[in-house]
Length: 470
Image 1: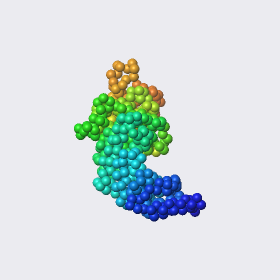
Image 2 (image 1 turned 180 degrees about the vertical axis):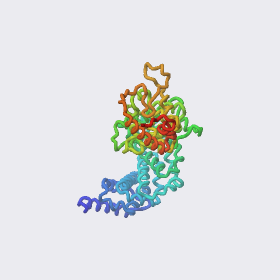
Image 3 (image 1 turned 90 degrees about the horizontal axis):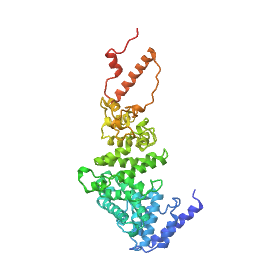
Image 4 (image 1 turned 90 degrees about the vertical axis):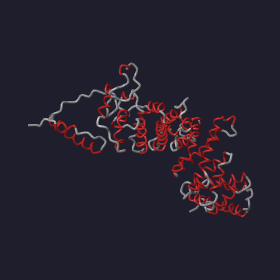
C-alpha cells in the first residue's frame, strides 16, 4: 500500500510530465524550473511509476537531447540517468528507442559533465536490457569515442591542474564513468576487445598519475585496475608503439610496483567476503602484464611475487610478506576466483614450467593447480626441487651457498631450517600398517595424473626390500 507521501509525489510527477509533454515542440522549449523540480523527486524508486514508462522515458529523451536549451537538456539527462538507476525496468525503453546514437554523440562533448552523464546512461542500459551491442560499435563507433575521451583525460592530467580548464576531481569523476562503460562493453561483448587497444596507454598513464587514497581501491583507481585487467595489452612480438609505452626503458617497474603496493594494502584491509571481488582484478592485471612483460620486468615481478630466501626460513605460506599472503589466499574457499588466478600468475612467473612451479612454491601449493589444468609433473620434479630451488637473494652472511639452497619439495622450506622431529621407534605391526597406508595414498595420487612414477612401496616389494613376517 502506497504511503500518502509517495502518492503525492507520484501525482506531482504526473502533473509535471503532462506539462512537459504538452509543451513539446521542435525543438522542445526550455523548462529549467520544471525539470529541476522533477529531479528533486527522483531520489527513491517509490512513486516513479509515471516516469519509468515508455511515455515518461520518451518525454525525458526529447528534452535531454532535442532541447535547444543547454541547461534544460542537462537537467533532463540527469533526470533520465536517475530514473534508469532507480527503476531498472525503464532501461529497455531507452535501449529500444532511436536515441541511443544521441547518447553516444553526447560523449563527444568537451564538457566533462556531459561525458559523465552520457557514459552513465549507456552503462546502465547495458544491464537488464536486450541492448544492441553490434549497432553500438558498428553504427555509433563507441570504441573510438571512448579511446579519444580517455586520451584527453590523460593529457589533462599530464599538463597539471593549473593549466587545465577542469579540476582534477571533475576529471576523476568523468573518467570513472567512462572506464566503467569500457569494462562492461568488453565484458559483455568480448569481440570488441581489440577495438580498445588505443586506450591502453592512456589508462596506464592515468593509473600512474592519480594519487592513491586510503584504502587505495577507490574510484577512479579501482576502475582503472578493472580496465587494465581486461584491455588488450600489446605483445613484444607485435612491435607496436604501445609496447614501449607500456614498458619504457627508463622505468618499467612503476606500474607493477604500484599494483603490488595496492595489492598488499588491499589484502590487509579486506574482509573474507570482499577478497574475491577486490583482489581478483589486481591479480588479473598482474597476470596480463606478466604474459607480455620483457625479461627485465618479468624478473622484477618474480622478485616481488615469488617466495624469497627469507620466506623459506619457515614453511611457505606462514609469513607476512606479499608472496606468503598470496599463497594463503589460494586456500580461501570464499574466494574461488583467487584460488584459480593466483596459481595461474605464479605459473606464468615460473615460465609455465611445472618443475619450476614446484621449486618456487612447493608441491603442496602447486599440486592442486597442476591437477586442475591436467598438467603432469615430471618424474624427477620432487627430487630436483629438494636439491635446488630458485633463490637468488641469500640472507646476510650466507654467500658460501652460492645462490642455490636445498629445500623441502612439499613445504618449500629450507631443509637446514626445518625443525628436527624425534620420531619414536615403530613396532613391526606399525611399520606394516604405515606401508599399507602409504601404498593406498600413493595409488590415489597416481590416479590424479599429476605424477607418473612407480609406487615406491610396490617397487620395494618387487625388489625384495620388504621383509615378510614369519
